[in-house]
Length: 296
Image (cartoon, rainbow, N blue to C red; front, side):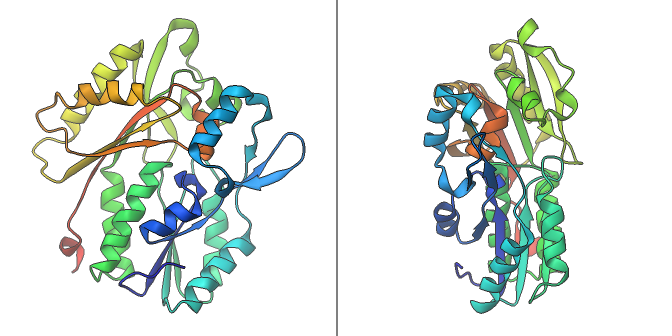
């Protein structure tokens, strides 16, 4: 269990698309997402680095696993580790309830936890969860209480903008995660819908565009309209197997008068990648709010 400067432990789940070692290096802890393979074998998200996953997907989609939620005992053990490490409270940040029942399991574990435990629905997934966990750590290290931290995270989350362009909706539909995009005949018409997570944590379409080029031209317009006169904006780009598509999107975003501070390009991992598929690219924008504004 990694130490921080507060008495509040931050724990997230494999929906963030990072391994345990990667999460520990950032200052919080991870509960992996279980995986079940077609041949009956099992594993979890911590066993797959992003690059290895994409190589497997491109070689044989049919052999890829299905995801499920962690069991209650896994949460109990992780919360106990936090208590043993000297933490007095735990904040669990979960993958969107619109994608998984993981949040429900976390709530059950929190009810009878050995130390006070709160559960926060990220209403999102992949590196957007990482950004939220980083902001949570910033908040608790700044001395915010649990209630103040949750208010802070809610403000960051509700102003966060993850815009995704899927090369095809096939993987979302086959995996049962298409949300409100399920009715689109995207591949048949070369429609590239720009998708996002709505406030209820379900994937929906922001705008339909014809072809990737048009989608990448539209995303900066959405960002420009969403973040006018903002001086604390950050953004990163997400990619599937190829970094070229992310670089192409970044060229368009950089044309904005205020694109935000560019954090980098990161790769989508196995939990989200199973449902996103090859060719996916996304932009993630959020405001790096000052925790002191919430210390009241």
